[in-house]
Length: 264
Length: 322
Image (cartoon, rainbow over all chains, first blue to last red; front, side, top):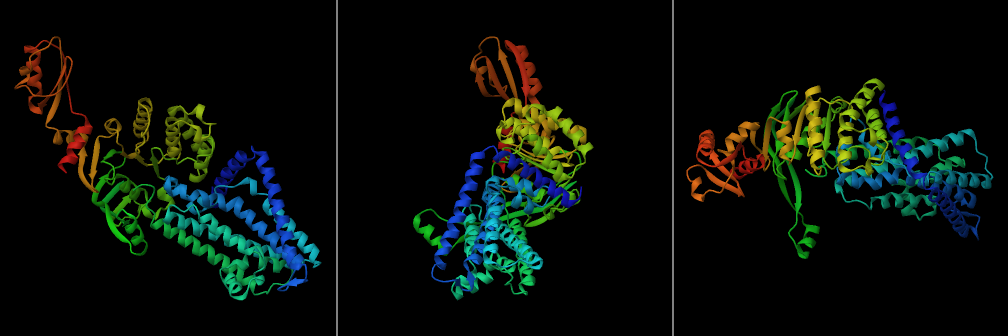
């Protein structure tokens, strides 16, 4: 069995078990979908306040802002479904010694601890988010070319990689700090900042959010979809995303170097 | 197989005196101390040997074990296991070892045991035939059939440990590190694990390094012991030699048919325990046979038994001397 198929098989078994465990609670699942839809409508309605007396805010129309809000829900859904459940368990992995076992297996421990769990209740959130994004694109009246769609796919992939890198970075921090239950809030705060286009923030903040890089989460993918992206970002975004993953991986390895286990 | 030379592992830890003022001061100025968990430890274990690793809590056993499994980077010294440097955690090395820790879960907690084994199969990249053969054997030896469909988290401690052992051995490791494998198990559970480990070692010639607080584990499985205290190795050798070196006495247990005066024992040995008609004497090793013969010929004796003191007492004596 090759390395990739081994890794895919292990994750498939873990996810299958997670799905089997959670679908037993159907009410939870459907109430979560309803709640997510409610919050999305709430956010869209809230944004309409800004456009009551003006057609555009910082160059974004209401429909275009809906595209960004939809992408925010897409990424936040992915975060809640795939990343957050793993981050939440990290402290336990360290404290209970589970990490000891993961590290003595011939397997990529980073992959296993960062992607092993999945929260089924949030798996539909990205679909709802993409639905709102589609509505925003249609309402904007802009046609979407194949090139724009490909650029959007690339930038959305970069956004997912950025979120993944942040999660791994926080996991590395959890290894060092051990008691780090609150780290999940950091990743939420990071995504929360991307709820609106970065141009809506005042300039010092806007510059910071571009560097941090919150702008790469929703603003740039939305711009790609709407055909208003600066082309150089098609090179910058992958470089930033890959760079972030490399830095996070190095931080993870560094944290393992100082790891002292549950009891030593 | 396992070569450890001058191993040292130090931890830098934050020390804070008690009290609010000290807490506030530690926010701006931290005092650190270096804890020397392991210092100048050297030993070699050849292939196929079962070695008991003994020491009180905090002696450095688990730290050494973690250095050998690659979890910790040694501060100094050389560690080679199966020709590999453990902390590099090369897949070729990790495929040939296994770590079992009592009361910790290596198996995925939320999966049924059978699925948890499947995960291990995928992790180790085992082909169907060897996996099935190893699993069938382990299921039989550890009596796992009724447990396979249950989630690991709902199993009793004893059941879980049997599953943990199976999960750890599916890939037939050459070196097995066992850290308190019978911790918390009842007498039957302990016996089952010991019997299994002895059989496994005999069948596959696996090298085993075992730490345990239960001397029963050590006496049942290991002829050689390493004794560690305060991070340094105090003894490395035969368990029997350890007993002889640190216990100049043997225990002669006499069961009497009728009571005898207390002064009867003067000159025979030191009375260490009196329990009704059973009197236990501590007798110098060289005189044990002569004393037993005298007891049988001069006293109303129903039974005489000669044994070594419990290993726990001997280990305690080793640490006391240290």
